Length: 299
Image 1: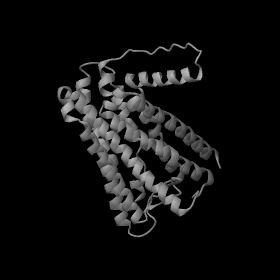
Image 2: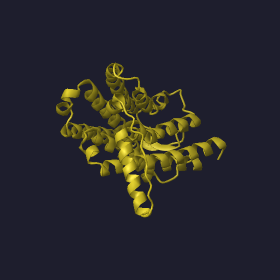
Image 3: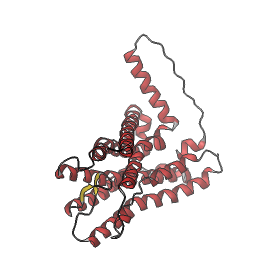
Image 4: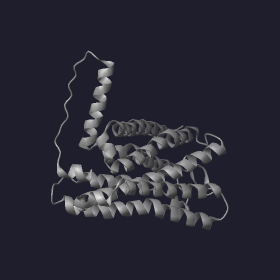
């Protein structure tokens, strides 16, 4: 294994650990805070965090093993399962970010009618659509045997293994248009409206740009690979896959852990753990309570 492979494998291990810890912390905050559970965005955050945890547990170790062994690390049946989950979870996570952007847009642009426009029932419908959308494309790929190991990406992913190139090209184009392109377009449109409102209240609007940029790491040369005269370089394929996985570690900070509400709940959880392990200690932690309109409404 050469140095780039060692660095890629080490990067994935680090990303997996950060993703597991940060997304697990989001789930703990959701379980320990009644206020967070009452809020509609918590539904989308929970769905996104669960997807990221499964990606860190299933797909990241499989890709790490593929990088280290430089070949398919396990049998075809298990590889098909990992490929199915990769397609399902990445699409589900992208649609969850789109749903969160819609929620932010309604909260900022229509604050007085937010409670009537975005209800728990509406959030449940959006999450159900995300699951059905992701499951339909994943199942279709499984039925056509398009879920297999790719040497270029060192991963078990959506991959044409023979048969009709045109069918696979159409399927891949529709899948990316309905998942990545739709999510990116939704984020750009909704956050543009949010920015128009936020700029009148404060200057701390970096979080909006950050959330949109995080989605861009899902871009990988799958559509380019459809061209018969183009071969994806293995080094570029692994780098693009690592960037895609890095989104699972960055999502918790972009959508929840940087908010004051989650910070306070996380601190409360840590204090409870400290009191259990050190009952005689008297640790008093302080939290910076500085907040402003933008951080609360658009982060």
